[in-house]
Length: 316
Image (cartoon, rainbow, N blue to C red; front, top):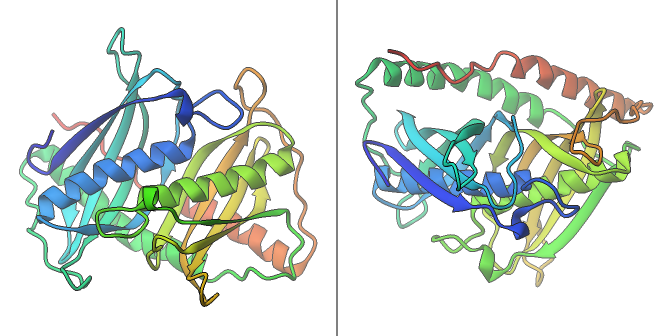
Protein backbone atom coordinates (compact mmCIF):
# COMPACT_ATOMS: atom_id res chain seq x y z
CA UNK A 1 0.00 0.00 0.00
CA UNK A 2 1.19 3.51 -0.67
CA UNK A 3 0.02 6.90 0.54
CA UNK A 4 1.76 10.25 0.22
CA UNK A 5 5.35 9.05 0.00
CA UNK A 6 4.79 6.02 2.21
CA UNK A 7 4.88 2.30 1.44
CA UNK A 8 4.16 -0.68 3.67
CA UNK A 9 5.05 -4.26 2.77
CA UNK A 10 4.27 -7.35 4.84
CA UNK A 11 6.12 -10.65 4.92
CA UNK A 12 5.53 -13.92 6.76
CA UNK A 13 8.82 -15.09 8.27
CA UNK A 14 9.47 -18.66 7.17
CA UNK A 15 11.74 -21.34 8.65
CA UNK A 16 14.09 -20.75 5.70
CA UNK A 17 14.56 -17.15 6.91
CA UNK A 18 16.12 -18.09 10.25
CA UNK A 19 19.84 -18.17 11.00
CA UNK A 20 21.80 -21.20 9.85
CA UNK A 21 21.99 -22.55 13.41
CA UNK A 22 18.31 -21.95 14.14
CA UNK A 23 16.61 -19.34 16.29
CA UNK A 24 15.78 -15.86 15.00
CA UNK A 25 15.39 -14.58 11.47
CA UNK A 26 18.76 -13.53 10.06
CA UNK A 27 19.62 -9.85 10.18
CA UNK A 28 20.51 -10.03 6.50
CA UNK A 29 17.00 -11.18 5.60
CA UNK A 30 15.52 -8.22 7.52
CA UNK A 31 17.89 -5.93 5.59
CA UNK A 32 16.64 -7.48 2.36
CA UNK A 33 13.02 -6.75 3.32
CA UNK A 34 13.95 -3.18 4.32
CA UNK A 35 15.54 -2.66 0.91
CA UNK A 36 12.47 -4.01 -0.90
CA UNK A 37 10.09 -1.69 0.95
CA UNK A 38 12.40 1.29 0.48
CA UNK A 39 12.80 0.54 -3.24
CA UNK A 40 9.04 0.25 -3.72
CA UNK A 41 8.52 3.60 -2.00
CA UNK A 42 11.37 5.34 -3.86
CA UNK A 43 10.31 3.96 -7.25
CA UNK A 44 6.71 5.04 -6.68
CA UNK A 45 7.80 8.53 -5.62
CA UNK A 46 10.34 9.05 -8.42
CA UNK A 47 8.29 7.31 -11.11
CA UNK A 48 11.12 5.09 -12.31
CA UNK A 49 14.13 2.95 -11.57
CA UNK A 50 16.39 3.80 -8.63
CA UNK A 51 19.27 2.20 -6.74
CA UNK A 52 20.32 1.90 -3.12
CA UNK A 53 23.14 4.32 -2.31
CA UNK A 54 23.44 4.13 1.47
CA UNK A 55 21.95 2.35 4.48
CA UNK A 56 22.84 3.53 7.96
CA UNK A 57 22.40 2.91 11.65
CA UNK A 58 20.32 -0.27 11.57
CA UNK A 59 19.78 -1.47 15.14
CA UNK A 60 17.98 -4.73 15.89
CA UNK A 61 16.18 -4.35 19.22
CA UNK A 62 14.41 -7.72 19.35
CA UNK A 63 14.22 -11.08 17.59
CA UNK A 64 11.88 -12.04 14.76
CA UNK A 65 10.85 -15.70 14.83
CA UNK A 66 9.71 -18.02 12.07
CA UNK A 67 5.95 -17.68 11.76
CA UNK A 68 5.92 -13.99 12.72
CA UNK A 69 4.19 -11.47 10.50
CA UNK A 70 6.72 -8.78 9.58
CA UNK A 71 5.68 -5.28 8.52
CA UNK A 72 8.16 -2.88 6.91
CA UNK A 73 7.11 0.72 6.40
CA UNK A 74 9.22 3.10 4.31
CA UNK A 75 8.42 6.79 4.12
CA UNK A 76 10.07 9.70 2.33
CA UNK A 77 11.55 12.17 4.81
CA UNK A 78 13.77 14.29 2.55
CA UNK A 79 14.70 14.67 -1.12
CA UNK A 80 17.71 16.14 -2.85
CA UNK A 81 18.07 16.71 -6.58
CA UNK A 82 18.14 13.00 -7.43
CA UNK A 83 18.21 11.41 -3.98
CA UNK A 84 15.41 10.19 -1.76
CA UNK A 85 15.98 9.74 1.98
CA UNK A 86 13.61 7.21 3.51
CA UNK A 87 13.00 6.26 7.12
CA UNK A 88 12.24 2.55 7.37
CA UNK A 89 10.59 0.92 10.39
CA UNK A 90 10.36 -2.84 10.93
CA UNK A 91 7.77 -4.36 13.26
CA UNK A 92 6.69 -7.94 13.87
CA UNK A 93 3.68 -9.67 15.37
CA UNK A 94 2.21 -13.04 16.08
CA UNK A 95 -0.33 -13.35 13.26
CA UNK A 96 -2.84 -14.81 15.76
CA UNK A 97 -2.86 -11.59 17.80
CA UNK A 98 -1.80 -8.95 15.28
CA UNK A 99 -0.05 -6.98 18.02
CA UNK A 100 3.02 -5.41 16.39
CA UNK A 101 6.22 -4.51 18.25
CA UNK A 102 9.03 -2.50 16.70
CA UNK A 103 12.16 -4.43 15.71
CA UNK A 104 14.32 -1.84 13.98
CA UNK A 105 14.46 1.49 12.21
CA UNK A 106 17.03 2.95 9.83
CA UNK A 107 17.63 5.55 7.14
CA UNK A 108 18.00 4.45 3.50
CA UNK A 109 19.12 6.69 0.64
CA UNK A 110 18.11 5.89 -2.95
CA UNK A 111 19.25 7.59 -6.17
CA UNK A 112 16.90 7.82 -9.15
CA UNK A 113 18.47 6.84 -12.50
CA UNK A 114 17.40 7.43 -16.08
CA UNK A 115 17.57 4.95 -18.97
CA UNK A 116 21.29 5.66 -19.34
CA UNK A 117 21.96 4.92 -15.65
CA UNK A 118 22.58 8.59 -14.93
CA UNK A 119 21.06 10.40 -11.91
CA UNK A 120 17.77 12.09 -12.75
CA UNK A 121 15.72 14.66 -10.88
CA UNK A 122 12.98 13.52 -8.49
CA UNK A 123 9.85 15.37 -7.36
CA UNK A 124 10.63 17.40 -4.23
CA UNK A 125 9.22 16.20 -0.93
CA UNK A 126 7.29 18.93 0.87
CA UNK A 127 6.76 18.18 4.57
CA UNK A 128 3.33 19.35 5.70
CA UNK A 129 2.82 18.19 9.27
CA UNK A 130 4.92 18.82 12.38
CA UNK A 131 5.94 15.17 12.32
CA UNK A 132 7.11 15.37 8.69
CA UNK A 133 9.05 18.57 9.42
CA UNK A 134 10.78 16.86 12.36
CA UNK A 135 11.61 13.85 10.15
CA UNK A 136 13.08 16.10 7.45
CA UNK A 137 15.21 18.02 9.97
CA UNK A 138 16.57 14.76 11.38
CA UNK A 139 17.44 13.53 7.86
CA UNK A 140 19.24 16.78 7.06
CA UNK A 141 21.17 16.58 10.34
CA UNK A 142 22.42 13.13 9.34
CA UNK A 143 23.91 14.25 6.02
CA UNK A 144 27.03 15.88 7.48
CA UNK A 145 27.50 13.11 10.03
CA UNK A 146 27.15 10.48 7.30
CA UNK A 147 29.94 12.15 5.34
CA UNK A 148 32.18 12.00 8.43
CA UNK A 149 31.39 8.30 8.89
CA UNK A 150 32.08 7.61 5.20
CA UNK A 151 35.38 9.51 5.39
CA UNK A 152 36.39 7.52 8.47
CA UNK A 153 35.57 4.22 6.78
CA UNK A 154 37.35 5.23 3.55
CA UNK A 155 40.51 6.23 5.42
CA UNK A 156 41.27 2.73 6.68
CA UNK A 157 43.78 0.30 5.20
CA UNK A 158 43.14 -3.44 4.92
CA UNK A 159 46.16 -5.48 3.86
CA UNK A 160 47.89 -8.76 4.60
CA UNK A 161 50.04 -6.94 7.18
CA UNK A 162 47.28 -7.41 9.74
CA UNK A 163 46.77 -10.70 11.55
CA UNK A 164 43.20 -10.10 12.74
CA UNK A 165 40.76 -12.99 12.39
CA UNK A 166 38.97 -12.85 9.07
CA UNK A 167 36.80 -14.89 6.73
CA UNK A 168 36.77 -14.89 2.94
CA UNK A 169 33.92 -16.08 0.74
CA UNK A 170 33.56 -16.41 -3.02
CA UNK A 171 30.47 -17.26 -5.08
CA UNK A 172 28.59 -16.45 -8.29
CA UNK A 173 25.80 -13.87 -8.46
CA UNK A 174 22.83 -15.89 -9.71
CA UNK A 175 19.80 -14.90 -11.83
CA UNK A 176 17.65 -15.25 -8.68
CA UNK A 177 19.57 -12.28 -7.21
CA UNK A 178 18.60 -9.90 -10.03
CA UNK A 179 16.70 -6.64 -9.55
CA UNK A 180 14.54 -4.80 -12.07
CA UNK A 181 17.62 -3.11 -13.53
CA UNK A 182 19.43 -6.39 -14.29
CA UNK A 183 21.91 -6.27 -11.38
CA UNK A 184 21.99 -7.86 -7.93
CA UNK A 185 19.66 -5.80 -5.76
CA UNK A 186 20.89 -3.94 -2.70
CA UNK A 187 18.99 -6.11 -0.25
CA UNK A 188 20.67 -9.26 -1.55
CA UNK A 189 24.08 -7.60 -1.31
CA UNK A 190 23.37 -6.66 2.31
CA UNK A 191 22.36 -10.28 2.99
CA UNK A 192 25.73 -11.43 1.63
CA UNK A 193 27.59 -8.92 3.81
CA UNK A 194 25.62 -9.97 6.89
CA UNK A 195 26.42 -13.63 6.18
CA UNK A 196 30.11 -12.76 5.77
CA UNK A 197 30.14 -10.96 9.14
CA UNK A 198 28.29 -13.86 10.76
CA UNK A 199 30.90 -16.30 9.47
CA UNK A 200 33.81 -14.27 10.84
CA UNK A 201 32.10 -13.70 14.20
CA UNK A 202 31.09 -17.31 14.80
CA UNK A 203 34.58 -18.53 13.97
CA UNK A 204 36.03 -16.17 16.60
CA UNK A 205 33.34 -16.73 19.25
CA UNK A 206 32.99 -20.48 18.62
CA UNK A 207 29.26 -20.15 19.28
CA UNK A 208 26.11 -18.84 17.65
CA UNK A 209 25.77 -15.12 17.00
CA UNK A 210 23.19 -12.58 15.84
CA UNK A 211 23.56 -9.22 14.14
CA UNK A 212 22.94 -6.35 16.56
CA UNK A 213 23.82 -3.40 14.33
CA UNK A 214 24.61 -2.68 10.68
CA UNK A 215 25.90 0.69 9.54
CA UNK A 216 27.93 2.57 7.00
CA UNK A 217 26.56 0.43 4.17
CA UNK A 218 27.87 2.10 1.05
CA UNK A 219 27.39 0.93 -2.55
CA UNK A 220 30.14 1.88 -5.01
CA UNK A 221 29.40 -0.17 -8.12
CA UNK A 222 26.77 -2.70 -9.24
CA UNK A 223 27.13 -6.46 -9.04
CA UNK A 224 26.17 -8.02 -12.37
CA UNK A 225 24.49 -11.37 -12.69
CA UNK A 226 27.22 -13.93 -13.47
CA UNK A 227 29.91 -11.97 -11.59
CA UNK A 228 32.19 -13.71 -9.16
CA UNK A 229 31.53 -12.04 -5.82
CA UNK A 230 34.19 -11.89 -3.12
CA UNK A 231 33.61 -10.88 0.49
CA UNK A 232 36.29 -10.27 3.08
CA UNK A 233 35.11 -9.89 6.68
CA UNK A 234 37.61 -8.89 9.36
CA UNK A 235 37.40 -8.52 13.12
CA UNK A 236 38.28 -4.97 14.18
CA UNK A 237 37.28 -4.71 17.82
CA UNK A 238 35.55 -6.66 20.58
CA UNK A 239 33.31 -5.42 23.36
CA UNK A 240 32.23 -7.52 26.29
CA UNK A 241 29.57 -9.32 24.27
CA UNK A 242 30.05 -7.97 20.75
CA UNK A 243 32.37 -8.22 17.78
CA UNK A 244 32.82 -5.33 15.34
CA UNK A 245 33.28 -6.75 11.84
CA UNK A 246 34.28 -4.82 8.71
CA UNK A 247 32.97 -6.32 5.49
CA UNK A 248 34.30 -5.39 2.05
CA UNK A 249 32.86 -6.76 -1.17
CA UNK A 250 34.20 -6.85 -4.71
CA UNK A 251 32.93 -8.41 -7.91
CA UNK A 252 34.33 -9.23 -11.31
CA UNK A 253 33.74 -10.95 -14.61
CA UNK A 254 35.11 -14.52 -14.30
CA UNK A 255 36.24 -14.36 -17.92
CA UNK A 256 38.66 -11.50 -17.25
CA UNK A 257 39.45 -11.91 -13.55
CA UNK A 258 39.29 -8.13 -13.11
CA UNK A 259 37.60 -7.14 -9.86
CA UNK A 260 36.08 -3.84 -8.72
CA UNK A 261 35.12 -2.73 -5.21
CA UNK A 262 31.32 -2.73 -4.91
CA UNK A 263 30.35 -2.08 -1.30
CA UNK A 264 31.38 -2.01 2.33
CA UNK A 265 29.70 -2.14 5.73
CA UNK A 266 30.33 -2.41 9.44
CA UNK A 267 28.40 -5.12 11.27
CA UNK A 268 28.29 -5.50 15.05
CA UNK A 269 27.56 -9.10 15.97
CA UNK A 270 26.57 -10.34 19.44
CA UNK A 271 27.38 -13.80 20.76
CA UNK A 272 24.38 -15.65 22.20
CA UNK A 273 23.88 -18.75 24.33
CA UNK A 274 21.49 -21.65 23.79
CA UNK A 275 18.60 -19.57 25.16
CA UNK A 276 19.29 -16.70 22.78
CA UNK A 277 20.69 -14.40 25.47
CA UNK A 278 23.83 -12.32 24.91
CA UNK A 279 26.96 -13.83 26.39
CA UNK A 280 30.58 -12.75 26.82
CA UNK A 281 33.14 -13.24 24.05
CA UNK A 282 36.87 -13.61 24.36
CA UNK A 283 38.62 -10.31 23.71
CA UNK A 284 40.61 -9.61 20.57
CA UNK A 285 43.87 -7.84 21.40
CA UNK A 286 45.46 -6.22 18.30
CA UNK A 287 49.26 -6.30 18.11
CA UNK A 288 50.30 -5.20 14.62
CA UNK A 289 50.27 -1.54 13.64
CA UNK A 290 47.48 -2.09 11.12
CA UNK A 291 45.28 -4.00 13.57
CA UNK A 292 45.82 -1.37 16.28
CA UNK A 293 44.81 1.33 13.78
CA UNK A 294 41.68 -0.60 12.80
CA UNK A 295 40.73 -1.09 16.44
CA UNK A 296 41.05 2.69 16.89
CA UNK A 297 38.93 3.12 13.74
CA UNK A 298 36.17 0.95 15.25
CA UNK A 299 36.28 3.00 18.47
CA UNK A 300 36.05 6.22 16.44
CA UNK A 301 32.94 4.90 14.70
CA UNK A 302 31.40 4.11 18.09
CA UNK A 303 31.83 7.78 18.99
CA UNK A 304 30.33 8.95 15.69
CA UNK A 305 27.32 6.64 16.06
CA UNK A 306 26.50 8.27 19.38
CA UNK A 307 25.99 11.52 17.46
CA UNK A 308 23.43 10.04 15.08
CA UNK A 309 20.03 11.62 15.83
CA UNK A 310 17.38 9.06 16.64
CA UNK A 311 14.13 9.00 14.71
CA UNK A 312 11.92 11.81 16.03
CA UNK A 313 9.22 10.92 18.51
CA UNK A 314 5.68 11.34 17.28
CA UNK A 315 4.73 15.02 17.33
CA UNK A 316 1.15 15.80 18.39
